[in-house]
Image (cartoon, rainbow, N blue to C red):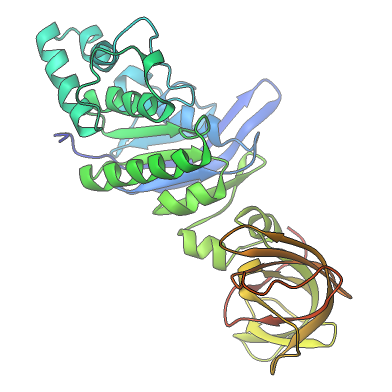
Length: 357
C-alpha cells in the first residue's frame, strides 16, 4: 500500500489562455483528500486542459492551484507529487511489463533492484503477477491499462490523475476496469481526479462530478444531485437521457409549483422558479407506459419506434407535446409500433429546470 498521505486539490479562479483563445475561464473548485472527483463534459469544454493544469503539464495564465494546501501554481510537474494515467497508456513497447512499471523510480535515481521491487508490489496489487516479462503488445487492453496504473502508483503520488482511461476499451471491459479503478481508489484512499466524456462512467465511479461547458463549470455535486437536480438544460440533457418538455409554471408556495404540460398538471419542487414558461426534464426510466389510461396524470400518444435491448424496451412515443423517449423494463409484452399508449409519471425522475441554459 502507498505510504503517501493523499492530497487535496484547490483551484482558485484559474484561467488558461492560448493566445486569444480561453480554454479555462476562471474555474474554482476543490477536491477533498481521499476522494474521486470527475471532470465531465463534451469535447472542447476544457476538462482535459484543467487536468493538465493540475498535473503541471500546462501553466495557468491566472489564478492559483493548491495541492495539499501548498501553492503549486508555478511548480513543474516533477515538483507536484502527481502521477497521470494517459488515454493512450503511453507504455514503452520495447520494454517488459516490469521495466515499464519500474521506469519512474529508475529515472529518479533509485537502484534497479529497489525500483523493480517497488514495481513488483504494484503489479501484484493490480493483479498482474506472472506477467512481468511480457511486452505490452502481448497483453489485452485491460491489462495494458492496469500496467499504466501500476506504473503511476509506483511513484506513490499524493494525487493520481486519469485522462479518459477507458476510451480504448470495449463496453464490457470498460465496466470491469472502471470498477477496478474505483475499488483501488477506495482501498488505498487515493485522491483521484478523473476526466471523461462518458456520463455513465462518471456516475459509476465518482464521489463528486464537475460538469464543464465552454471552459467553465456548469454544475458540481454528487452523481445523484446532478442526475436528479440539474441546474439547467445543458446539465439535464448531458447527464443521462432526458425528455425536455415545455411547461407553464404556476407557483403554489415557496417550495412547490404546478407544471402544466398540455392537459396534464404535475406538482413538483419549485426550485426558485416564478410563474411563466419553463421546462421539465423527465428521465426515460421514470415514465410509465401502458395501454390503458392510468389513475394519475398521463399523456396520450402513439408508439413511433420500439427496440428490444434484452433487459428493457426502448420506445419513442409521439404526443401533442412532442416525441418522448421511454425505457420500459416490461419486455414480455412489448407494445407494437402504431399502437395507442398512455404515459404516466413516476414518483421521481421529473424535475423543473429553467427554460434557457
